[in-house]
Structure formats: C-alpha cells, structure tokens
Image (tube, rainbow, N blue to C red; front, side, top):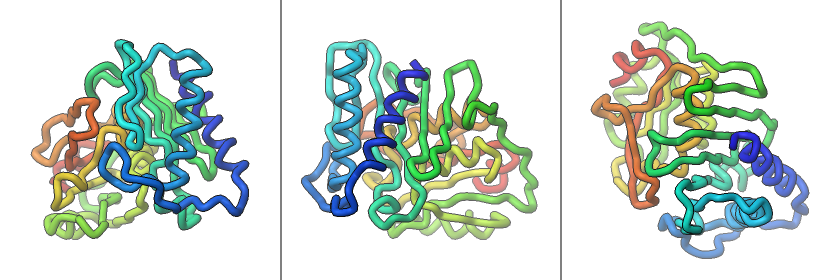
Length: 257
C-alpha cells in the first residue's frame, strides 16, 4: 500500500513540475466540498490522483477536500490533500506538499501514509506498527529541553487569543503555512511541537490535512492530541474539525499545554 501511495505522489510531483508558466495556480474555480474555495492548482493535483485511482483500479474510496467523499463501495478510504500549503504554492513559497493516507473509519486507524514535499522532493512515509522514514531513513522524534522548546504555531487570522500564551512559553517559534510538513518536521526532530488553535471551529484542522502526517509522527515516537491533552481521533469526514497539538517528547506537551 505504501508503495502505491509513493507512486501516486510521484505522479503529482511530475505533473506539477510540467505545468507551463502561464498556468494560473491561484485561479478560484468553485467552492469545494470542504466549504473553501478550490484553486486551479488544487483541482489539477486532485485530478491527477483520481486518474491514478482509476488507472490502478485501486480498491479504495476517496476523501478529498475538493471532491468530498467518492464512495466506490470499498472498505478502506484514500484520504488526500492534493496540495497542502496551497497559498505557499500560489505565491511560489517553497513549502507545500501532497498528503496521502489509507484508513477505514478514523484518524486512529490510518494504516499507511505518504507526505511528499513537492518542492525539494523529501518523502515522509509510515506504516502502522512499522515505523516512519524520511527518504528511506528511519525517523525518530527528538528529546525536548523544557526551557527551550522550539515550536511551530498556526498564526493565521483565526488564531485564538490563547495562541500568544503558547508562543511566549516556547523558546523559538515559526509559522510555515503547511500543516502536513510542519507535523512531519516534528517527527523529523527539527521541532518539538506544532500547535494549532483557531477561534472558529470551521477554520480548525480537517482530517485530510493531517491523516498522513499524524501517522508519520506517531510512528516516529510522537503523538497528536486535542487541546485537553487527549489522543486526537477524527472521523474520515470533511465536516469534522479540531484544534490540536502534535509533539515529540511529552515534556513539550507539558510546557505548551
């Protein structure tokens, strides 16, 4: 299953790289199934993935932020974010990804995951119970220094007021605009945690955004929790949203929550 996800991510990478300079990545086409505008680049990448599903005759349903749930009568579902970090992509900020995961009912039964950085081609992979890897090398979260936690934090216009308290508890803070890669950076040991707290429910994280990266982090020894500290689970449903903390070492959780 992981090999199949890797192959699909390669197809997306190659297709995006082959786009002509005249392609208007930011053109808004319509409102997607998740209630947000679908840009030209999102639809293009999603179409590549859906073509792969048909060509490979994969025994999977598909859940995507643009098309919603495509029920193909299967037991398992391919959960996709065709381009995570869309605004980075539109602005040519080199940090955006394709995120692919396979599961049955919820975030906690995701069994295989791939996150590919569509700029530098870094490939994060995970299989449940088999560990996580970056470009084939095993991943492990780092030990946190409670006095110098380095955190990635959502700092967009809908960041809750509590966010600044978290910022002040951390030693260093960055906000990069691509949740899947930010969670993977925690798995990689570059940061101690990623924190997202939105003041509007509908602006919080969707399962398509973190289905893959959550498994990568968990298989690297970290965890993803809600802001009460309980293990985060979300149904494979675009209507479900959540604020969350992804961390490597539990000491980072103690500092930031």
